[in-house]
Length: 110
DNA sequence: AAACTGACGAAAA
DNA sequence: ATTTTCGCCAGTT
Image (cartoon, rainbow, N blue to C red; front, side, top):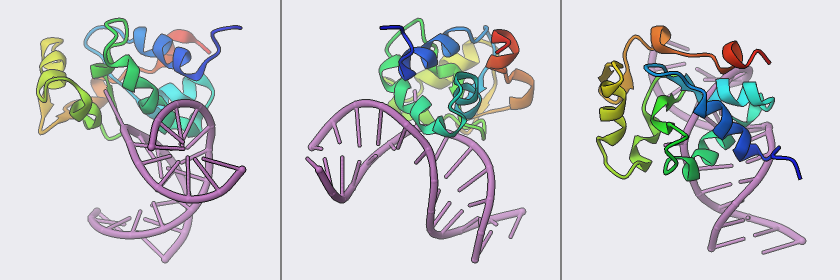
């Protein structure tokens, strides 16, 4: 069985997010090929948030809002990680989002 | 087996 | 422009 699992695909993409960058669920979903399954992307991250290989803290919604911060062990953990990478977070949302946004397809050249 | 849920997103009102 | 509703798909109950 090939690792064509939805989750695995998501992990691969998120894992490729460069330092100091963020991406959106929809972009990842699109990179996978399931553009309409943006929800599934976040859903898949549920198990990913505990994996160091999957920097879920670099994944935010299309709004640049740290939607998943509530799912992290620490309430402030996600924000701290982002700020630690040079990303400024204001009111649980990424500032200069467009500048730090990273398109998975841009690197994976789908 | 059916219904509900959910880190989203886009369209409709 | 803002608020509301629907769709998506897989996992859980």
